[in-house]
Length: 146
Image (tube, rainbow, N blue to C red; front, side, top):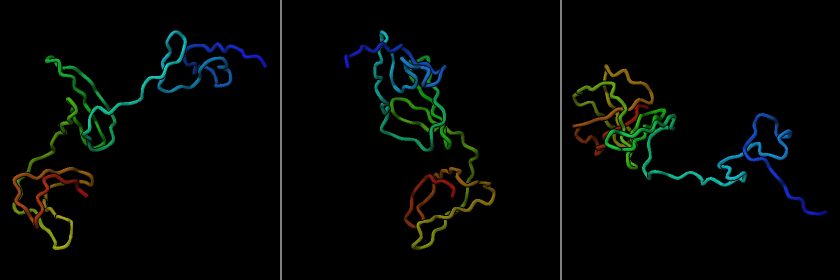
């Protein structure tokens, strides 16, 4: 059987079915067309070694008047601003309260109980403690409500 030169149409045609798009491209990923020929676009590249909490649901990119390139990263848990590979948590605070001796520990247990009668917290809420003294040898400043 002799060789035959194939002439494929440039671009991706999703208007028809896979079978009626004969002689062209129907489904592609990470390619672009240059002069009618497909060319691989590279994959994804990590912009930072640091991570954020949650699953990213939205990204918003803008440049400030001072020429800073910023990206707003909205997750299912928090909102961050990415600047130069660092993520700053700018999630609004719901409330700030002062508690007196709210921490309690049990010997041998990894749990720390925090008592705030008027908190109204729900599962998954984040709380931050500041100015607290160590209890049971623990000094962690942030936690998630379980």
